[in-house]
Length: 436
Length: 120
Image 1: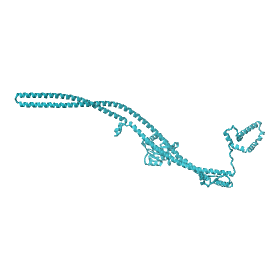
Image 2: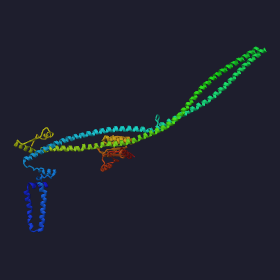
Image 3: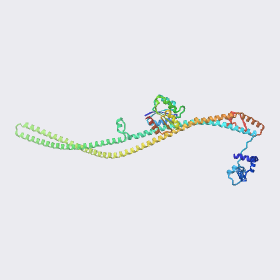
Image 4: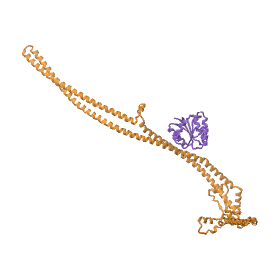
């Protein structure tokens, strides 16, 4: 509004003065009827209005003339030196030129709309490809992720089953394996059984040694009996000899008695030889018994030592095993805890994977609705623009332009380059146009 | 464990639902659209149907209405798994016969909890 007033003040000051006079003149007669104080008030107010109007419109209007003032800021200077609004030219040449420019703009708009529509179509296809590729990628990712989580779970379950399984499962299915604690318990039991067997063996060895002592005692008795037997054989031999002598001296049945005594002596000698043979055998048995005794004694000592060591080892082993089992339990507990963490991560990953679907839906909506609408709108604009350029107005402008061109052969002309897309497009709509 | 039908046009979503439910021991069949879901429902009985709302062609509510018209699915639980969370849509779902409404993205634990509840 202020720019209009400024424009009128600047360009038609006399008209403004005349108008003001005409507006105020009918009220001059009121001065004869009003009291002096009212006239003073009205005069004061009119003066104030005049000053305000002068400050608001006249000073800014002529401010450009004060642009040399060194106190003015850059912005003020730019504002002051700004060119006044261009007055529209009213001659036919200007109108024709501007309409021709407008036609060029419409041409460009049509071309741009067409290009934008094509690019939007390309974007739509590209968006479809992006959706497809993303879906494939996320699908592959999901499958791989599923494989990983399944394997991780199997690992975790295998680890946890070391503690969970018990001996009942062993009886339930043949060939089933023991849990770690059960295995330790079974190992401990077997080791204890081995120790017990070794202790029993040691006891049996001791018992054998006792029996061997008894055998030795019996052999000593046999030895004494053999001594007795030998002594008896010797005495019988002597007795037979004495009997033979006595029989020789008696003269009766001499020969028969000699034969008898010889026979007795031979028997006595045989008994003595047998006794010697038995004694030799007994000596050999005794030697064997000594060797056996030494071996059994040694074996018993070894068995005792082994049993003692085994017992000590088992005690130590049990303590170590229990500690190790506890460590394994702690480790498995950690594995279990990690498994739960992994499950939580899996859940989070599943949630994250769903964003692909949500994004896809939004993109599908954009592709299916928004881009299609944009394309349709751009196509419509393009067609409408092309149709508009075929109107009589533009044909008349073209004729006028050609006429003016013929009248002013020296005037500048602007031709639309045929190799630009816009020009090529417009060429399809209309023939080549020369614009000013 | 239940026999469940997952209906979604997005393969990734079907895969994710399958993953979450199979892990818990359920058997999951998949359908990429309403027509495929109805064909599957005609052939075999499912304990639960989990369907997306926005699908190309017919939408999830149409599927629910069609399922409710089938004798085997008159009382079967049907869950709607969708990105939509407007109350008017939920009301429309309820009117169509939807048992529950889950908004994407979902937490597998929450899905399993809901499945457990509706299968009771």
